Length: 137
Image (cartoon, rainbow, N blue to C red; front, side, top):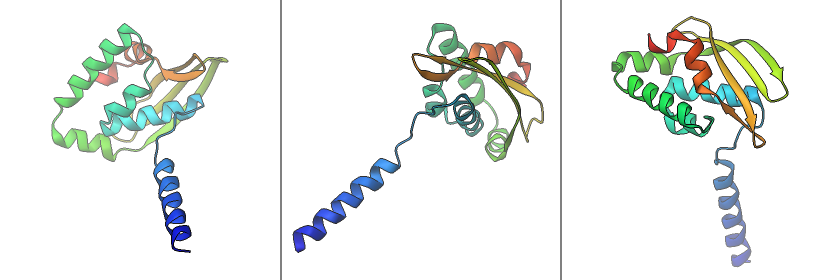
């Protein structure tokens, strides 16, 4: 009986640990939402996992991280406190989606491009940076 209780406790502990793992988003909207929230929060580890892996994206995202790190604490907190709204979702084709959104801090429409490569959705940051001058304000 004692071993059964220990086994049940260990099994429940194992299940609770697995449920806290971050799952890879499986839709463009989920990928976009997670990326938007992560960048507003300054959580670049999570955002980078959702980034399309290519040299230009990596360089641009690194520049954005450096820019964000130099922001005053109050501005970072304002981004963290901001919520966001998805204004439009445009499926360009079966592997490309453009998400137009705004956050309550900037109140300015912005776009992100989410593309599917190797059966995974990722944010094409170079598209975002090319279309949105608000990223540097």
